[in-house]
Amino acid sequence: MIKKYYLLSPGPTPIPDKVLSVAAEPIIHHRTPEFSNIFMEVTEGIKTVFETKEDVFILTSSGTGAMETAVVNTLSPGDKVIIINGGKFGERWGNICKAYGVVYKDIILEWGADFTKGQLADELKANPDVKAVFATLSETSSGAIYDIKGFGEVVSGTDAILVVDGISGVGAAPCPMDEWKVDVMVTGSQKSFMIPPGLAYIAFSQKAWKMVETSKLPKFYFDAKKAKKNLEKKTTPWTPAISLIIQQKKALEIIKGMGLPKLFEHHRILGEATRAGVKAARLELLAVNPGNILTAVKVPAGVDGVKLVKTMQSKYMAYIAGAQDPNKGKFFRIAHLGYMGGFDVITALSALEMTLLDLGYAFEPGAAVKAAQTVLKENWQ
Ligand SMILES: *Cc1c(COP(=O)(O)O)cnc(C)c1O
Image (cartoon, rainbow, N blue to C red; front, side, top):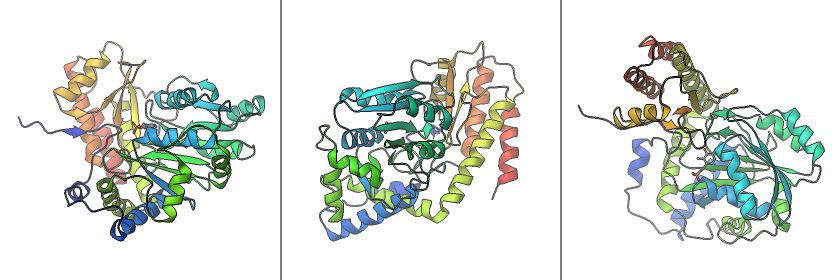
């Protein structure tokens, strides 16, 4: 049998053919008006996706580089912050803060648990001296989505800034930066932006930029002031990932062509179809408040979770994601973000059903695919 490769992971995500092919075009020089035009068009396009009037800086790094940029450009040694830590990526905010000597209160949630704006308000009342609150829109390790709008309402009433890891979430779920009072927004290119890994995007509110001006943490490559000075000259401080920016221009044509409301609706339908499918196979979701970006599903009793993911990947070539440490084997993650369509959900569920049969799990074969088809059919447009 010809085994086709199906990428169903929450990053990297599949890339449209017409976006892939522009990477093969001859490289152009970045200090030219030709490149500057492309660079500014992409910068404007990302601003539209962020729903902000602030500058967006394009960094050559994976998403974590933008997270580090957020920390080192706003804070000073000894500053105190609050971290909403709902999983692997919330935890990363703490690891970055630790590396730079920032004092942080880590609010460790059970993976998949929710955190309300009321709880955040209480934390801020108890810790009135914090300079920033670090949150995650879509906690990719658990599939949970968080109430960034509510967090923005709470944090904007204080002197602290709200820093949001929008990697995987922005471009798939609503998170209008200005309207929801997000002070620093970061994303990465390989999630919902439909291009390969290698670019990260960051924007600062006016309130955050005031902190940038006095921030004393060490920085060089990720210095936001250098990025701003260069953006005014329609360029970057360092050699940008030229080919990726050209690919992003092409992918933005698809994103802008669809428009954000339709893109969010598309993700809602894929999320609903996936959830309906796994529930029909008598499986449980991990997240209390699951996002439409990826679906984390608990491994049922009697099934080896590591083997499940391994079988999906090596036997059926359906590259879903397993659970990260310390929850390895406890759940698995089916992604439906970026350039994924309705039939990608069907592929994932179909491979999942075949895998569950292989592993001896008792359920009604075909139920998951059928339930997802019903949702897709009802919403197809
Ligand atoms: C993927 C991801 C990251 C990490 O990004 P890298 O590109 O691997 O550096 C951070 N946060 C979230 C929520 C993510 O999904």
